[in-house]
Structure formats: C-alpha cells, structure tokens
Amino acid sequence: MTELKPCPFCGCEVKIVIGIYGIHGAPDYYTIVHPENDCIMDEFACYCTDDKEFLINDWNRRVEE
Image (tube, rainbow, N blue to C red; front, side, top):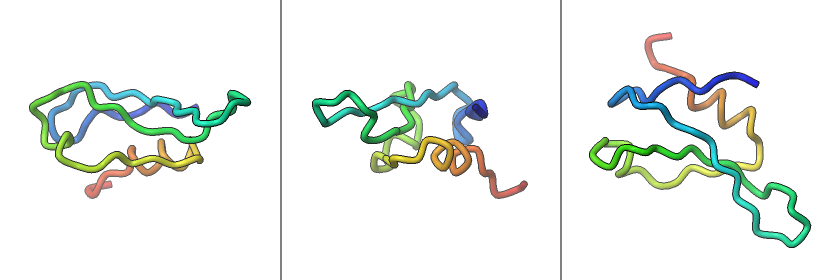
C-alpha cells in the first residue's frame, strides 16, 4: 500500500478511515480524515469511495508533479 502524503495546505498527517454500513463487516467506503480544525481542507465536503487505491492515488496527486 502506498503511504499518504501530508495535507498540501497545512502539512499535517492525514489518515484513511473505513466506513461500514452493512451487517457483513465488509468496508463500504474509504475516506481521508484531516485532523486539523483550522485548515482549509475542513471546508471541503467528505470525499468517499469504495476503491482504496484510487483514493490514495487521488489524494497523493499534486499539481506541480
């Protein structure tokens, strides 16, 4: 698994959280959790997907790269 890059706005470490809706215990979605309350990232809507690798690759993508 690829490691998550820090937040591009404040530099803090972020993590992936697994959301489970069903009774079978299989992950229904993954999302990025941003722990800083005063960062601009808190203003964005929750980004959820059922594809963990896509989420990681999308988060790690930077404009200057």
